[in-house]
Image (tube, rainbow, N blue to C red; front, side, top):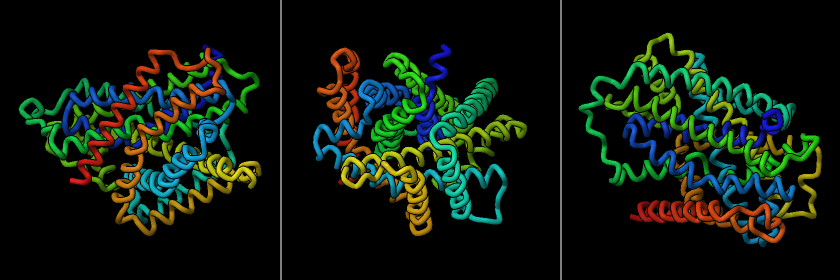
Length: 414
């Protein structure tokens, strides 16, 4: 147990990064709109996507190489595919995350004198300084506190809503149809982003690389996987918590949750406190803000690291990732790019997120296959390759994602 606690790192960061909009927004909406039945796709998505993220830790722990280097070893085409997906993420995901977090900040601290854009800028500066000064070890240690606060706040809130019971009208409430166009699109979004996008497997791999650098002794594959599994299971459990909170407090009220970050934050916190009591405001608001703040930190760190690694593998002669200031520079570049995106395209943020969703969904099965091909390649010792059961689960996951991607494309073309 002591060794496991010392090894905590990539799994913890994965949990912190994944517990974002997919949990706070989509899981809550799933419970609010469709009730307890949405626990099925939440658990199914977490189960069938598990191998793709596990392979990132497995490959890095055994070979001491990043998954992105594994793609490069497969061929330049695979590396360019991942580079394209990363490029889309660079211009969309961080901007969307920071806008939602700014909305929650304004709600939590009752900020009305400045807009979400100014708050987003402040968050960019603050988080960039944390990442540059503290680097990986500070990020890992600080997130242990954030995740602990988040888990306790959500656990308390979940127990409270279960004790309070569903809203009076929930039994007579007619659940919306899941298998129509609106329901299927929501289901696709929930499954596609639960626990997070498949390209984040590369992020997990790079965190694994950083974790290895900070440890005096390289952990065994078994220990590294145990650590990752702790974070992954925590991610799934908290998704269920958010779903239960949405189900118990909003299902049957007919409330339409807004897509605007500030309005959504206000709805989320106030509706929960109306149902539970005003005294519970602190727990709910802190849980919501901690969720998105930690997601911004980890996503900003990950996208900066993965961008550097991709550029280094595409242009090895440039030594892009060898300079000691390269990470700090990339963190600032990511902040600047996404601040520009928020400033210029805030009114069209939904369209940018839709673009990121489309690219992520379409390439998810291919990235899953690339991960499997990498972790079963010639640089992986046979003894450390995934066993038959995990391979079967991987193929099931690829089929699952392929069907969703095909249906999503078909609906967009209709």
